[in-house]
Amino acid sequence: MPFGDSDQLKRGEPVMAIGNPLGLGFSGSVTLGVISGKDRSIPVDLNNDGQVDWQADVIQTDAAINPGNSGGALVNMAGQLIGINSMKISKSAVEGIGLAIPSNLALPIIEQLETTGEVHRPTIGVSLLDVQTIPAHQQKELLDLPKDVKEGVVVMDVARLSAADKGGLRQYDVIVALDDQEIQSMIDLRKYLYNEKRVGDELQVTVYRNGSKMTLTLTLVDGDQF
Image 1 (spheres, rainbow, N blue to C red):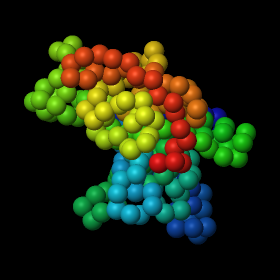
Image 2: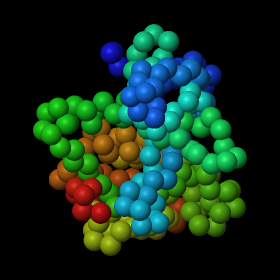
Image 3: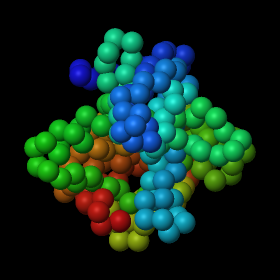
Image 4: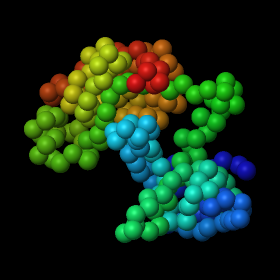
């Protein structure tokens, strides 16, 4: 099956989910829906300790996704794979919120697995929030950004002895660029970090701190260390 460009998806675009919900008794099931949302960030607790370890970047669809067809294909009307069915929000008051890994995020991982059998992700060692999600009065009080800076990523916490800690990043720094790549959101940051950088690389991080712009140099480490 050819891969499609998940960055080009539009809300309302029809899609199909293919898989085996509830096992082989329903193998090859196809459900139809639309793209309900793009660039959703869903908190994930990887080790079941009650703490959020990761923000999964996913596509939202109302095509039915159930246990068994997760891992199956989310396909556009051109027959291209644009997502991998991953999870659903399942509560009594919720209906029709299925989630899929975008093909553009999955493809580099597939290529690493095919080449080396392993995946190694570089990490900075911070927790983040998009500037746009922070109310204006809090932006003014906590971040002291210039008036013309409306986008970026706020450092909410820095892990001890991480690349960020050793490189001088601090809480409430606002990241606006990595190397020469403008960063407007957490999605931009992850895409650049995971697609363009490798463990051991140096990374130039441009931030605003207390209204002043500065550039810091970080040496990236393996994400398995944090």
